[in-house]
Image 1 (cartoon, rainbow, N blue to C red):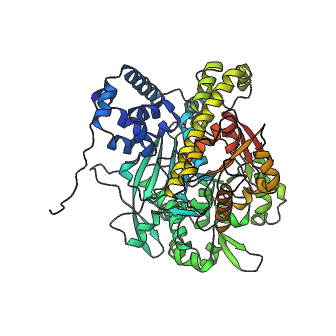
Image 2: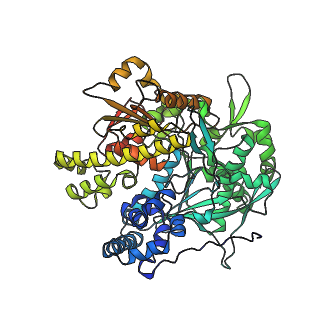
Image 3: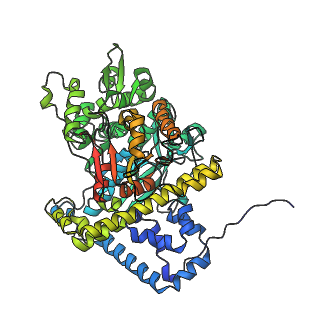
Length: 622
């Protein structure tokens, strides 16, 4: 029999719960536990299998599961409540921004970032930078800020991590279709896709635009994976932080210059532009070009005009962490640009020039960002000081204390990271709108009124859920690695909720010092296996595929977890993502943070632990 093809039958949502699709397409579900529960309750196993992706879930769920929910009065009651609260949130007119700036309702702020971490179902983030950017947009939504986000749609995303039987990190790249994600395609009035072109060296690249809706805030994701582009250009938006230098600069040109063109094509005219790290700095160059061509300004007049409403946030406290390229490489991509704006090569190069200790010159994107913005900040008080010293050569002759780089300390979106049981405690003992007062120290004094037993019960229930999830992930990893049956049975007796649990989960970079706790292995064994006060350690995190040092740390911890004296007391959870992060920051008793000072610009995971009743055990960095 000849194979012709296959047909996928997509279930139809009953009219009584028709708006599940609308809820699935707005990422406000990322900070609304009741909305996620609507999907989970239909089919818990499928919800887990689809990685909590409501769009994919609704396409794969069985019709009988949907019909069953329609006949469940409790489910319908929860559905109606969630929809009502969603409508109230989206249509709220009395937001902080509208109260504070009633005359500025038509202004728009553009926030550019190479990655955004909204939820694990949209994996276009790698770690802290993206998660912070995602929290910024969520908070902007809560405040009613007229903000739009701009990034890239990585159709192979950041890598999925597997740990093999020898502790090696395996990086897998899994393709994603935008139609299976909580995204909307941006179209023209006739319904066809909006396609925009951006110059890349001597050629032009076309891209489409996806919109992610983050509560009240849109985030636009640029996608070069189009049939109109040659294969090498389609790969520009394949992987986050993947490929060589040419791929990196191509992504950054698409993000910056392409992002400006995308907003203009959609009729969006921002009054302020925020560059989250130097990845997006080329947005300023594109804006300069527009002013030179359309307003007939000189290059330097246009530069001053652009800088006057451009904000730059730097996150990196060490020189090696900042993107930089050889001058000949920059010439390949920007000769056409400097010719178009009427300047010479040396004038363009000096905008990003940085002389290395060895005497040669490079083009540094952080230097370029500092010169093309009037508002600049680090992400903590210490990081602001470190940044002023690090970049003092950009302002030669000015005292370090007067270098115009300030600081704004990073925060977290409390509604995203506060687990359901703790939210209920705050609603009961503080107020139902506790999340609207998170920046008021006096308000938080109310937590002292929470009875100890209620807090203890809530914390233990969350801890049990976390340990169950960790156990399931480790079991799946062991089955894939063909670990013996005896060890699988032993796993059932491990991860005891009555044992003090310490968590360490973050990007596995060497400066974060995951190994520090293993400095005296024999002493640690005695502590972990104390018969009266045992301790267990749970680790998780990814190392960049090119970071051999970070991967060696992962190998060390993973193999150590199988050694006598550490087995059953040390665990490594593979494929760290926002789902694993939510489990660990809410469930562990103690959060371990010991980076090498001052290399952690601003750590936020400890803030999330505190919201969930955990203890942040940290050095004074970040």
